[in-house]
Length: 323
Image (spheres, helix red, strand yellow):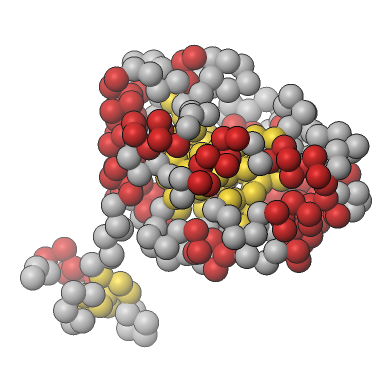
């Protein structure tokens, strides 16, 4: 799996980054889901943007929770989402504090998101300008820090999203331009969208088609409500991650396993079949990626190079080539 961003490659030397978000100690999560070495942390004012009065010292203190320290001490990683008012950010009001936060994160296994799911509360223009101001400030302070974005793919659905959050064609172009090291998406099944997998979700497919291109991407949140068919959907999603050409390029997978802000226990992974399917996913995806058997020839159109033997094979006859 090729990783385009050099800062990100430092965190993923063996391939995918995997996690199950449960707000639990690392030994509890990794014990239930071996290979799940990442957790999520949300820093906000009870779901709202942090007040402008928040000092740099307080900002750093809010990030360095007991849970974050425990995960880092265990050699694991944390995806940290800090909710800020991006209109304030684009005006430079958070520059010094963002630089202070970046310097506090030097060398740690952390991916930083400034205000995830902006489609819900921030216009495309403000999101672009605020995002880029934050990105430039953070990277100027600590170039190796991995700074990510996280899209609410519900808002990208032309079929399901309400008019107040639906991403228009014009807004999509602006949101696709946001600077980032890793493009993450948050996608759920069983509520607004039927039980299924990513390529069956029109919000996710539209987001991926417009935003991702050849850039590094992953799932900052992916969850299934506890309804009939959940374990089977998780297994199908695993197969897609393993075998689909697009799925194989998904660099980060964070399975959602908490009640969230709405305290909905249906998102928990407490039932044995769903927990077992999630464990199978993490185990399967944590295995070293299998390299492509054939790659296109750099000059000859329609000709493939067999990576096992180095010989040339017609693209039309590749499925007959055996070793």
